[in-house]
Image 1 (cartoon, rainbow, N blue to C red):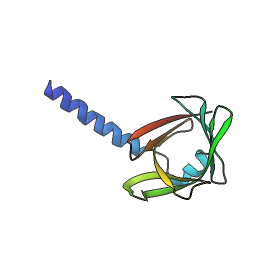
Image 2: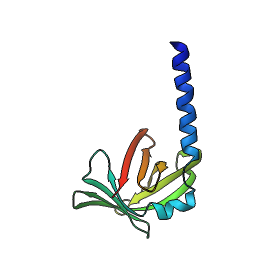
Image 3: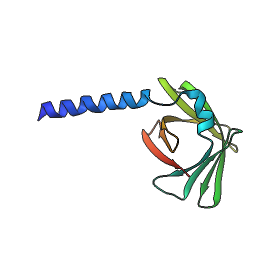
Amino acid sequence: MKKIKSILLIVLVIMTYSCKAQQIPRSEYETNIIGTWVWEEDTNNKLVFTANGICKIYQGNELVTIYQYSFENNVCFNYDEDDVVYLRWKKISRPTPSCLEISGMTANTLTLMIVDRAKLLYYIRQ
């Protein structure tokens, strides 16, 4: 039983690193993120990224908040990780920025991680 658990753990670690290696280059994030993304857990929650570095968050049809966003390689405030792209954003109404790790992105999916809580947020392109 221990041998099976060890093998499963090794497979999980290999899959995690191989998926990270297949991520798109940072330079493509700027164009691929533009559009509307719906949160998988609550389809009323949407992120709308624009080409001018603005992200609007909606709950249903109601605008909740507006962020300015940019991308950071490897380091974003207290977070320092090789081969990681961070989404750095700050509310227009508040000067303190925060960071989310971009854990994965395809043409139709976006996975962000709230780093200090290790919580993954899954979005689908609308």
